[in-house]
Amino acid sequence: MLFRSLGLGGTGSKIIERVHDKLARGSQSERIAFVVFDTDINDLAEIKRRSPEMYAVQTSTRSTVGEYLNINTNARDNWFPVNEMLNRKTLTEGAAQVRAISRLAFDTTLKAGNLEPLHRAVEQLFRIDKDQEEQALRVIIVSSLAGGTGSGLLLPVAMYLNNFLDRKSTRLNSSHLGIS
Image (cartoon, rainbow, N blue to C red; front, side):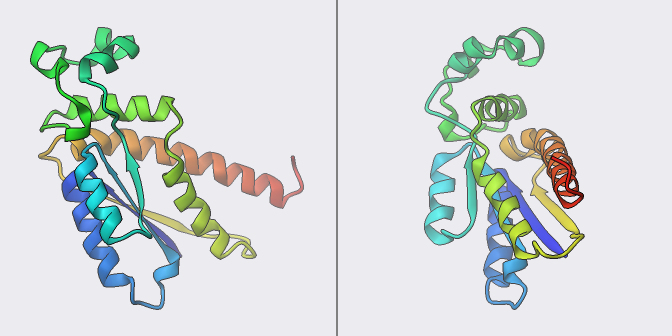
């Protein structure tokens, strides 16, 4: 069985990093991929410095919430709680306990096609047992529900990953059957 562990937000990322450190010395470590998502650039930089083999997805840019909302008018008009104080916030500092900021950052990351570290982690796992006909992939998502980034990413990332793996599985099954 192949495992993928995802840490969402500061708390989820720290937990995944601790699990990574404990399992890195084990015989099954190549069968596990670790991915962390965060809006806080400083927390991600520390994790990448300490554990460079982990995949990291930064879901923020130096833009402010207001600038994000000017681009993502659907969010502004339909679901984001527009607030003048939030509009001035820069996302690289984290979501500041506001789940909607995290979702806004993920939507932008997704539309910009910046989920390559997540895709590379999936590819790494599928290359390990490429000769086997069937592989089981178990995804473990770790997040705090009390914060901003992790709790705002939990459902969107889970839904995205489910769809991504379904598409990947369909392509693998089609290629195995000789369908192109």
